[in-house]
Amino acid sequence: MQVWIVFLLCLGGKALAAPATEDEVIDEVLEELPVGSNPVQVETGEFDEAIEVEEEIPSENPCLNHHCKKGKVCEVDESNTPMCVCQDPSTCPASTAEFEHVCGTDNKTYDSSCHFFATKCALEGTKKGHKLHLDYIGPCKFIAPCIDNELNEFPLRMRDWLKNVLVSLYERDEDNNMLSEKQKLRVKKIFENQKRLQAGEHSLDLLAHDFEKNYNMYIFPVHWQFGQLDQHPIDGYLSHTELAPLRAPLIPMEHCTTRFFDQCDTDNDKYIALEEWAGCFGLKEQDVDKDLVI
Image (cartoon, rainbow, N blue to C red; front, top):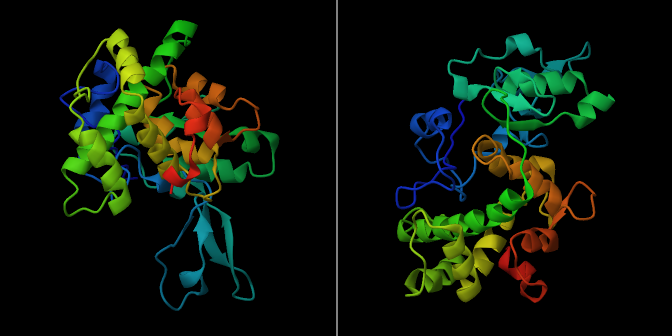
């Protein structure tokens, strides 16, 4: 498995949260950007349980143009008709590094995402399989409980980080086209604002003060990230699978991640609507604009 992690953009030499020694392996191993428009998350295909992938099969095989989702492989039946069946975990490539391991919501470490999805497929149709999701990157480990005051601090850092990610993209997006022209215009206003808080490590009090004084700078970054995640399908709601590219690399470093996203789902329907997402980041109800997501 090749996981391209560009989640930790070192903006001004600082990460979203204070780095922990055991997590620095993830930073050092993966440095290249994946193809795509959102460098703040792991490549979506690594975690999306619904995305179909094409297998490399000889052209004479009916499976050539038959697609199966992760965890399944194509086989032909007695009438030479292609069908998708669960992959045997033993056929997955062996992992070569610890960062390839993933932790499931069953608190079990899997050698790779291939092993995880093959196992999940075998449990399809069962209560255990329905509840099983990929939780985060890396081996399972103890993650300290998130207390209330830590939970209140989480969106302060996250908002500032999203804003700086967009500014960083704008600065180096001359040829990469990672932002649309409309997006560039919105980020340009943030980039050129003399009151913008520069990237770096700031106290929580300063982050809170900046959000209050420069509130308008944070509206678009919050909407932008929602749009980057809402892809499968684009329906105005974020599922657990759609959140995975953002939350999976973040959980080992920010222990309030799971509780934060759980509390964003205010109606407990297992989906986060745009209004719920914006509310989590402190945006006012009248500033929620679906047009900013597109």
